[in-house]
Amino acid sequence: METNKLQLKNDFISDIKGIIETAKINAIRSVDFQRVIMYWRMGERIVVEEQQGKTRAEYGSYLLQNLAKYLEPEYGSGFSYRQLARARQFYRTYPIVSALRTQFNWLQYKLLIHIDDADKREYYEQETLHNAWTGRQLERQINSGLYERLLLSNDKESVSIK
Image (cartoon, rainbow, N blue to C red; front, side, top):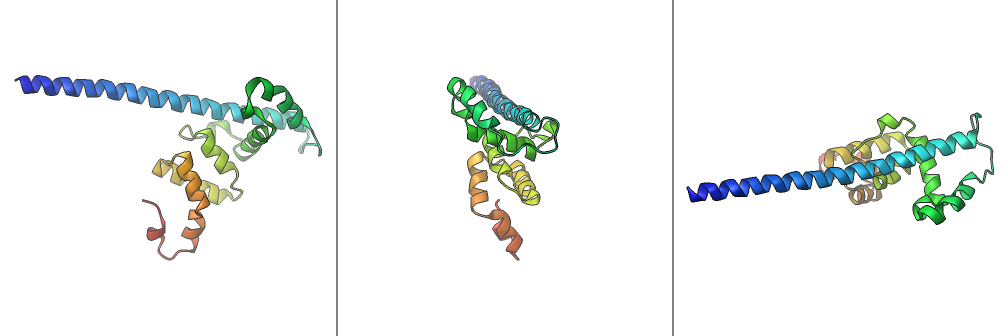
């Protein structure tokens, strides 16, 4: 009887710990995704401002440099010229906000937007979802040329990641 009470207590404690850990993970993911949305919205606003109703932005616009001068001192390096340019590229690469994946964080999107080939980018998106890759794991797979190795391989099973 005492063993059953102890087991019940341990199961109960484990359940409560699981609830806490899940909430922590979900909170972090929520914050990460809000960062993704922030950069997407900034990219959208930058593109709209640059183009001012035209199909293409004027060459030589110093919009991002000037914007960075205002934002970086107050908000830090996450708002540098380079980050603002990434936000713009992010919006151009993923122009539909509802298509953004809540499972991805900003690091993963930063890696994905540098892939020009849409098929290759989609491959890495699918593999990241399927394998629950972190940003570092995704970066390692991109840098190792996994996509190209799979295309060239006759034995796709031995090349793919388990």
